[in-house]
Length: 303
View 1 (cartoon, rainbow, N blue to C red):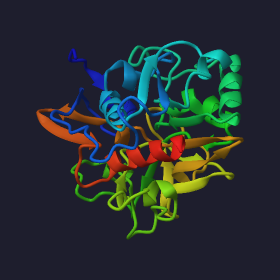
View 2: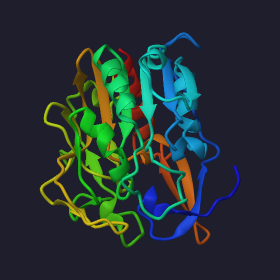
View 3: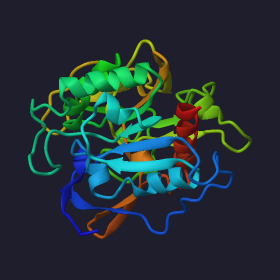
View 4: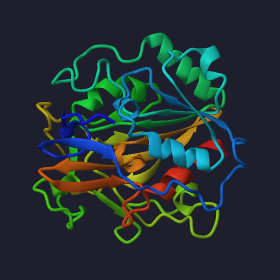
């Protein structure tokens, strides 16, 4: 992958420029695959809406994990229609934008998904499809708001910060946006099938989000609860607005299922180089349970 200077504040809460690359080596193997090789449900990774995580190759670790778990994975850039979506059981939408990542300083009011696409997607989920979609902190949150709103989820605008529940080991000035959701602090919902897992050893205990936005969805179950000390702060020129209760939601929508997350970095396995210093984020970081969480999420959505 070619080295590209990017404003990392759009993806991780880092106020400098750096390189985002897949961490190597990353172990994408699955000890006990859910499905036989190539026999699992068909999963589509959207690449038709300037999904920069996919375009930059940063979705490859998740694709490799899903493939190792037996899923039939496709990456495609076609617009959403009823006929197109009907081929798949599950859809993954990494943060979507109305233009190429990095080509403009701010997300504008330009349309990312057309009304027809959103209607087709809503009908597909209602009829039994499973959707995994990701928000991000400002300015990405503005571009995905219509998508989340279509499924009854409201987004905050800005970045979520918590002065009490953050990862103290992170050495950066903005570490209060690195939110911790654990069984011990009570902010991780330990009673949901995604966090419980299906077998011994699949339990989720420790999650940290890397910045991100806030979600509110009254008809959904909260996976990552925001504490009373959490606030929405101004970020990337966007005035903060809205309130938020969660950074992770899961629930049924008609005959289908939806998982919505306020931050996408946990589903990658990347590192960022900042002035010769390496910052790792995602499924390869041993302190957090993101790889198992990703597997459990796929299992729940495809069950």
